[in-house]
Every structure is written in C-alpha cells, then in structure tokens.
Length: 168
Image 1 (tube, rainbow, N blue to C red):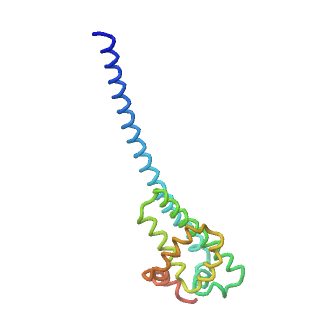
Image 2 (image 1 turned 120 degrees about the horizontal axis):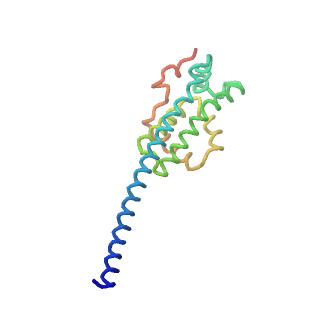
Image 3 (image 1 turned 45 degrees about the horizontal axis):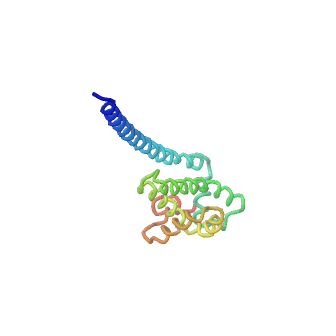
C-alpha cells in the first residue's frame, strides 16, 4: 500500500466522520427545538394563574363584570384596577402571537389565546377601553387581533361565562 492510498482512505474516513457529525447535530437541533416549543407552550399554559387574585379577592369578580358591561361608567380607580387585571392577559396573548411567528407554539395554541382575548374584547363595555389600550401595544399584534375581532363567529365571553353578563 502506498501513501496515496492511505491518504485516500483517510479522506474517505474523514468525510464519513463529518457526515455522521452533521447528522448528529441536526438530530440534536431538532430535539432542542421540540423541547423549546414544548416549554414555550407549557409556560403560556401556566399563565392561567393570573386569574387567581380575581377569583379569590372579594369584589373583583363584581368589578370585572361591571367593567365588561360598561367600562366607561366605572370610577377612575376601578378602571385602573380593571386595566391592571386584564393587561397581563393581553401581554400573554401578545407573547403567544410573537411565539407563533417564531414557530415556538403551534397554530391551535396561538388561536386559542387570540380567540379567548377576542371574546373578552367583544363584550359591550370594552370597546372604549380597547381603543385606548391599542395605543401602547405593538401594531402587528393589534392588526392580527383586530382581524380576529372581525370574525362574526367569535361570541362575547359572557355567553360562556354567564356570571359576566349579570349585574349583582
């Protein structure tokens, strides 16, 4: 065997090692992407806990009900509390929108968040509130959400959460 044959065998072996390494790295990248996507979706699902203070603080459900019926009739303190109650939801939905754009959550999870917020914003008392809040939220997200709000199939949230539709 001469040195040229040994060199050729070395080049073939090196090529095989490079191919195996590339295949291994591609598999690792896919696995890491799958884990990151699952973690993103899990983190969004955990945000349901933002409602715990509303459910456990006396009077907040009543205030939430009044806000969705007629936000403008609330006193300034109640309007502020309502905004601070609902803003985390908007923040989470905007996060879902951005994650969906980056392929970090699937279409169903994204649409679930968007339609849930749209159902809230369909409540009769929230149009003025939403118009004001639009000024401090990203325009791309606003456009996507406004498109969903045009869908006549999205009912107001009070049709599912009956306690939102009645005065106390």
